[in-house]
Length: 369
Image (cartoon, rainbow, N blue to C red; front, side):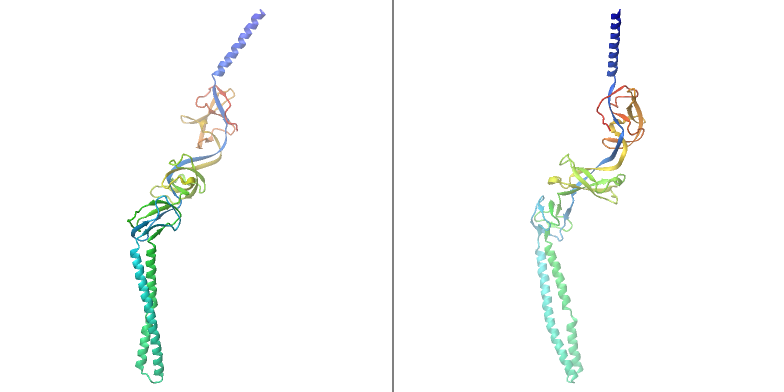
């Protein structure tokens, strides 16, 4: 009889264990985290063209035929280095003509000086004779008129005018040698030997490659959040998928009337000078930032008709939904504006598989804050 009782009790205990194991097997495994606070920044990607930070179009000052090209596209140049030479024959002739005119004016002045001195002496002599009664009034007036007429001229003005003309001619001659305005790299060379260079068209473009900048157009809704001097990431996919370090250099204060946005310039480093002027770039700008806000992982929020919910685990290990209102988000966290309190434990993984009342099993893996 005793043996029968023991057997029955053993079977009962074994059955209960099997039921518990079966029940445990039916629970969904989830990970949980505590609700905490985070700094969140909303990032937008803007595109633009990358150019040298200092990029100059070289414009001729005179129109003439190109007779010498001293550089080619891609060459490094120093400020003041000769890029090309234009035909200077007309300007050389102008210099010679202006020099001859100056020489003539100077000779004329020397001759005039001699005449003036001679007329002065004659006038002084006639004055003395007139005072002694040895010269008539007419002779005195004639001597004075001769002296006055010679001094009334302005040979100095003629010389000054000739000097100006010579200076202008020399400047024109000097402009036949086109030099680089900055140190950098020849980006474009727009003329060939024999072409006629014109002041209306650039003959070359000189750019810096060690320091570049990207110009992006940012809409008026986002530009108030862009901070000058802020560090940013820039991608030039033609070169690499790895980002370059950039810095917000300037923010336009007036909107572009055509593009209806504000130009933001990003200064960026260019190690190895791999990025070339004219390449396409992308920049990530923080447009909205909030500090120390209540936040949960983005994965914790489950969209539902009419709103969003997160799931918690009650004391009976069942999933319970809580409706929440959200704010801004980044790639990792989303702001919670109502519905949760700091320190609450919420389901962060497995939450898309549960519903109200689902039995769950919490497994290690969630962040402990």
